[in-house]
Length: 254
Image (cartoon, rainbow, N blue to C red; front, side):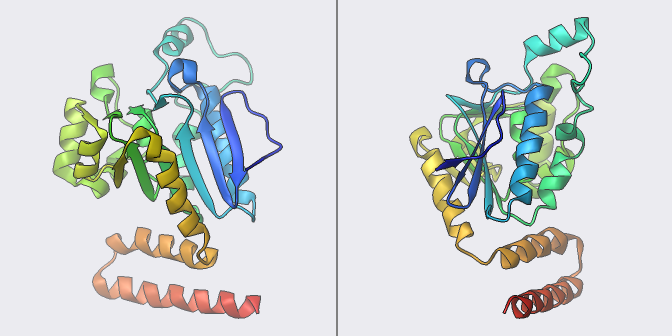
């Protein structure tokens, strides 16, 4: 495993055999979200996007949580004091306003290794990922209604596509917390494994993806994201057009 030259305060960034690993690194606060951490996640994600050696991008958390939601102590402090010059204001940073779109448009596969509790933004930040692996004992919840705020990061679009509208309504409107296995049963995550197997499971999946042709994976992601909004005939035509792009790209590389 090699370390990138980037040095962050709240995030770790490493590259392991073509897999960029972005680790939320506030374990003493259960990796609870603050804008400064969000800024670093965005920077690390864009760094991985721009690195031609990176084939897959993986998100995880340090310690016993993935992300326990917004840091409530920070919310209290920020309500009392305005943000310092150069610091992002909660709700105005790129993590909230544009990262989900950048993730959805990424040509590279994205995996979330939810090693522990994931609450609020700790769930919504994973929804644009292609695969989510959660610890069986992890508490997972979209608890926005309990905080008196609306869900964000495009979750009102992404969540119904994953779990269906009925389940999305239940999870959002009740703020109910589920464990990893139920999250898997609902379709919120694809894998629920013991906590000590989360990272190895996610890395195994990442390595399988990293072995594939990156142009093929990019076009497959594009086809999958566009397909549901198209008619069957339109989806088939889109597949044929993207297949032509793949053949051209392979021809150009020879």
